[in-house]
Image 1 (spheres, rainbow, N blue to C red):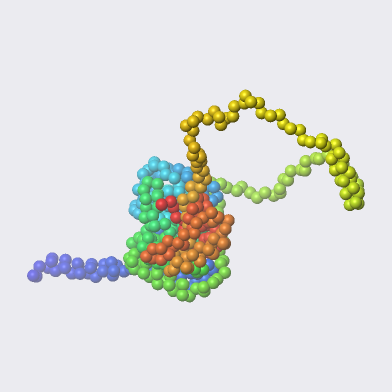
Image 2 (cartoon, helix red, strand yellow):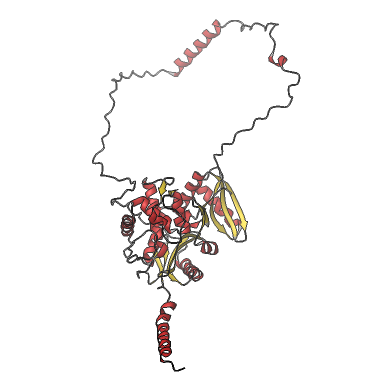
Length: 460
């Protein structure tokens, strides 16, 4: 075929394919960091300071600020948030919120942490700072306070945007802050599924959480520009490792590589290390636009202590007179003898009962039941249907040993709970059952603050 037009089209097609083939086959840039979470020591790094697209790892900062806002009283977990059109129109992954809809703040947190919902993340930012730009400024100020020197945020969700960049090192630093600054909320990142108000949502990282021993969080991320990203943490015994990876080619490839990096971290980390928690990031002090915030206007220069209340002049103390023991004994003997002499010869006898008094038992009907009445005590458990899990072990002996150690160390918060070992094909779960929800949250917070793995178990 000698058609010149066809020949030119064929040549152009070959040239276009040759130009696009490298782009189509090129993976997102790879970067990784492995850190001993207890000390902050870097155990491995590769391109860790290269600025890349963080994708939904961004939501770790959004959630950190949300936790901070709740603790400062800026917003309550059960406060209703009205969804704006901007939040409702965010692309997937999303919870499916509608403009004008109201939803509790706690459900937005769950959706962003577990489902990685973009509409929920945007709604959190607008609820706290009034608009997306103001919230991005708060994110950047918090990042600088943490020492995230090569990170710039432009939005709350992490979708690709010009200038929205971070590094593997900075995301590892952020993940460590989430774990140690807010242990009372960290269990969110290990929930396989949760109620997000409008529906139940499944964890985007459930495969890694189920497959890697000791894994308990924290955040996945994916965009075409970023590839498959993950910041993950796992705890085994007294050791905790954090790994961040950018640029995976698929979910399975990413998980496999992160598992290798985790194994490397556990192999290199010392079995025992002194815990050195990072200093919590200070609260953002910038302006807001419509958000309900608590602000400290200034420091108290001096304490206005109330004056002491005037009291009547005390009477002078009487002189203390020491009396000999023999004098006291003689006086007591004299008093007893006088009381005995004045006592009547015999005690008075009470009058006998009149004959016309009818006893109550005599009035009882002949058909009265002979069996005793049974009174059931009302339960005062206060909803003790919650529990906590403190790890999965390869033998029942190990699980029972950990339960005993934790019970002795946390007697105040675990008082009244039941130690229970549950066997499954994956091992032996060490659980404390019979707690209230508040008691379970407090126990987990205290245990996680001391470096012990813990997550809550809800009523079945």
